[in-house]
Amino acid sequence: MKRFYKAAGVGAAPEGGFQVELDGRPVRSPAKAPLLFRSRALAEGVAAEWEAQGDKIDANAMPLMQLASTAVDLIPAKRDGIVDAVAAYAGTDLLCYRAEHPESLVERQARAWQPLLDWAALQYDAPLRVCAGLMPQPQTPEALRALRSAVEGYDDWMLAALQTATGACGSLVVALALVEGRIDAAGAFEVSQIDETFEIERWGEDPETTKRRAALRADIEACRRFVDLLRA
Image 1 (cartoon, rainbow, N blue to C red):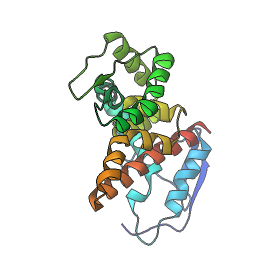
Image 2: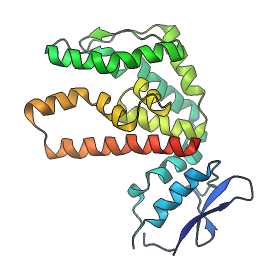
Image 3: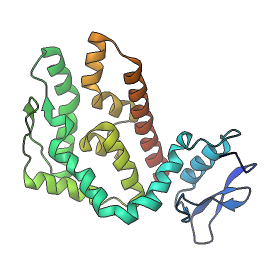
Image 4: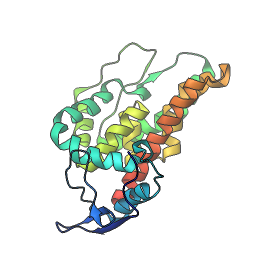
């Protein structure tokens, strides 16, 4: 789609809060719903994405707009299913499955992952069991309920970020730590990619892996920025 506006900005919404405006007209979601921001900082972030577009609009270059649209269009309509899907990651969380060898990888995983599991146990009263190897390790119902409750407690906007972060990290614990400020985006990418990084150090990296990792890093960074601006 060609750029159809001259300038993007932020204005006060009649309903309260803020709206992104293109040549003075409010932006709506892809489903034509009003995009009302409670945070001016987030509205300004989305407006900056629109302003940065060239002659053609690239939706992939607007991650904040995509997350905001998800919060408005998708989360309310499918909230229960999304909560189920995000919370389900706790049952097979990446951080709970450790390598058996080599020792250098075992030590690297324990050093990076165990502090986050300890944090989740204290923060949510949700201690998760750790095992060596890939065989499923059942978690206690109490821990799973506690983490599901944490997911349910987020509003639609925060849940949009948590959903994307969980998928990008492959771990609910890492995603929770990211959105709660326990770790930054670089840290979340690093801990969620320990296995892949270890293999790359040994065998090198092919172009497809490089592209995939760059996309995951961008998703994680966008989620953290979205949350920071939402809470500003």
